Length: 319
Ligand SMILES: NCc1[nH]cc(CCC(=O)O)c1CC(=O)O
Image (cartoon, rainbow, N blue to C red; front, side, top):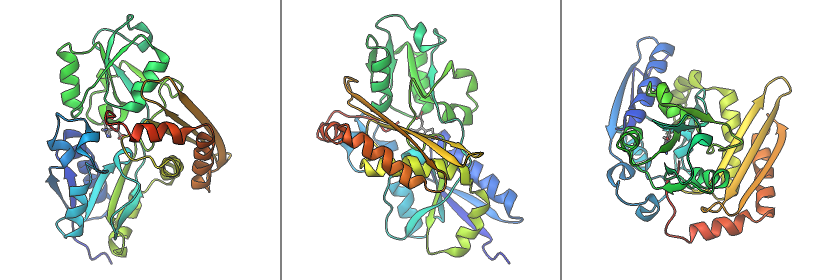
């Protein structure tokens, strides 16, 4: 017998966050007859401060802290996160309970004038605040001018439409969720732009000592996506990747052979040094594979590159 009759979801107020929370609300109501689910919309530090590079505001989990406080003091029961924004460590008592089926994990090239990144003319202006995206773009096209671009998805699109940029890069998943498929000029293949760890996947955070609540959430879990994300996050954790780092990690699951293929990348922001490593391993041991790929990157000098980035004030967004 299910005794929880009402659940509150803490969410940020951006359209994408609201879409994601609403999606989980509908999934939960479909899984549990008569369950009432309510959204509790909160402003986070990362949403309020838009004129400063994220690195200067400081603190990991700029977008999740307020949501976690709401769960800890009982104003909310769960929080829905884009997995790529979720820090590696959780406050005492909280943790991830389920990972939902993932959307397309790629990055999207978005432009009003050019169909692909290769069509961009020499010296074109491209907007992104992500070190990960910036360094891979520089590597592919050293001639491009890479400019800082912050704000939520709609703000970023508005800046593109105002002519500030010839193109911008956004997560394909975010655009699809918001019904903005038509904005995607080109889904960048992982060979051109390896996605962020956890990109495209949603996770639910909750109080871990609440078995009844966790049982209620379990039907939403997608084990294949969870496996993929666990490998990517294990790699990120070993590299001590916070959220504002030039690290990419992308795992692909082959269910038939029960193997996982993980590719990782670390680079310095100007793209002058880009390290890559990859590995295959059992889908039953995703963390072991993540560790192995991380170790290979560290052997190539990833630690030195990251130490330099962490010591530098200028680094940017986590996308
Ligand atoms: N950094 C912001 C952010 N966090 C999650 C997404 C949506 C994609 C996802 O679910 O991973 C986005 C937007 C973007 O990167 O364009």
